[in-house]
Image (cartoon, rainbow, N blue to C red; front, side, top):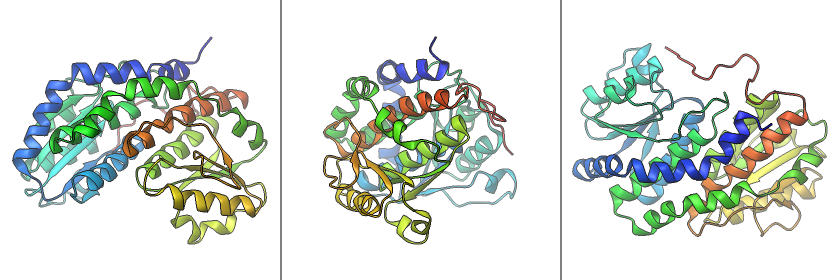
Length: 340
């Protein structure tokens, strides 16, 4: 019998199509609000997997719309009561449950300050949508497994659709519409070669640059959540500033490389680790020393990076079970974490 996590991974294409169909009007409304506001900057409000989704959206906005994006610590409002001046900008709050008190408090503070606030959530109605001016239902459907998968993907898809609407980027719109088909292909990819090499490793690095760094961060979290395995995410450039000291022979390094401007540099780092004896894998045809993992090329650098998480989810769910864990019920974790 499939785990809930595996079932929810398999639902990603359907969930994406549902989001693009059912939430199109709300995405258009929020996109129009951003055009009207023409924000000088944006901020994101999120935690956990949702914060990794926010990091992906940050890179997408900066690369496409040319607006700087910063991540706000939710405790600024809930604990410190800081009075941030956000009137010239916009805020995107992401929460699957829509009710974490600190996320809600920060969204409320952003709205009071005059920002255009947009909530991406899997739960409507919810406190996060009440705290924001605009709400977008990511329409991922019920997610039972503690480790988020389809809700993470749907949050990013909603953010990309919002960005495409705001900027009237027809190429990005077309790429987003094509995602259900690309995800269906990505689900079928086999990363078992990486699993067979990991053996008894108890620590590994996940690398990426640009939007793929957000994917690496999400992958590292999933290793910890589902398999009690220590994994750290680094920029493929930043890893050379200290963390490289831990990379010894057979140390596992997984590089998430998309078909974008950072692919060459990411591959160069992966190959350099491989030549030093590390167990280096990368999602690129351009590797020469590192080992290649299969990927789906979507034809757009942003959606290409997002598609990388789908085969990883399938891999890590199987890896967790092979180690005797239950990926649906990680130890000491709850599905909804309500922080102050």
